[in-house]
Length: 315
Length: 315
Image 1: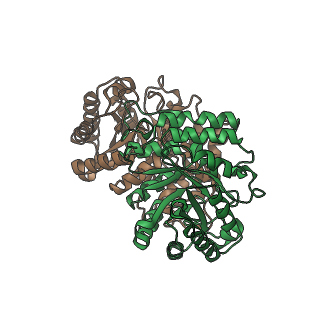
Image 2 (image 1 turned 60 degrees about the vertical axis):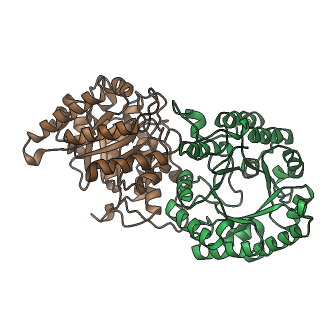
């Protein structure tokens, strides 16, 4: 694997697919994930161990995790909303768990039926579960603070509280704590400020950025986060996604456009843009008529465009 | 008029309308421009003194300039491609002329039928024409270097050449020289570098940024330009626009999304976002079925959103 500067974490198979009514067949999901790994994506969030009655689109997550974990050179993540989900994720051998903790009390209640403090207690219990495992079977645990930049239900969220909550999550045992603009409310000045404060508070355990493009500000926020030293960004192929519990919160930033941004800036992602764009065909075939977004796939690369470095799929 | 931090220059009536096949009726144009001025836009580029046989959509520019120049508190610009255009613009009483000079030789030839050096000689003649006028009738003259960040025909454009060309245009007498990403090829690292070099070369005569959103990077490039000290940005309401002579170059950044970005960052634009969004109805009525873009008009403002400052329309 060649060196990369920025980790692009593909969340389409989780954040994208959970937000649409139809369910992508398991066979298509595994082919899509294999294509993403083949394009050089270093991390893929493949599903959610939420109760299958709540999100039937995610009911096959254990099977998907098992298939995806066999892919070489890629870290497979799954979302876990609670301790029960963590138990299922660990039983399936999930290499890395991502746990949402809402900074907004109203969003926390409606999304996971808990207060933020209760959600952090849940993180502590998951970490205890992890620590009781043999060393070679312990998954990574990252926390993502949703609605960290504002909430459709509550409005602005206090920035000092967001950082305190991040510290609580780190003390609970999370390997890293990232910040999510679940509702696309954030702006670059705020992103620079909050990620700067996060790094001062957590040091190397300061995690990545998850930006929704609700108001078209996603990549602008990435530029600000890069300046604050953020090195991991979530994105969704074709801009699939959103949050079914946050009204008005539409899709993630588009992976294809993010990879173009980073490579054009001279930051190596290890991703082969042509192979990444080719993987859209799998979504289009499995979910016909589902809208796919992205400017770069439509416009193509600029004449004479050079990537920042070799892609991992060639290594 | 209250203080503003950033000048948003609306180019939809020129860059937007010249790129679509249909012609907006003169009466609708003047109503749209009045609505934009009423929303607090400090600058509006209302048309182009190009040969009417070439762009019949712009044939009424003299009439539009006369009507728009009566609006209070707004600077009215028109594009002039050559000396003949400048003569017509001055005869119509245009307060400020904007002159495109292509950095790419191939684009320059196909766009205005001249080399970049010939285009700069044209700027010198326009400035001589201006300087021969009585002091109270002299228009401002700004130059915009198109394809400064890359060209669909030529590929990458040498950065040192772009800065030399900017110096030539300033020596020719332009009040300011800005940089245009005509083809949406630019990235934030390049934008920071080029606008930094422009400011070092031209000082206060370094002009604004004109970014097309072809690859979805427009607002990301604005964030980088802000860091380089740029204080004027072109944008097009509803993302109307493009360049009919640069294949694959789609519309400008969306004014509504740009104003949201700036105000959310605490930068005062003097623009009333609600009145700005309301002005879309005039385009929709005059050009039914013409696609209008923009995330903020669709998603609305975040709950509890506060603008950076009062809007000029209330002053």
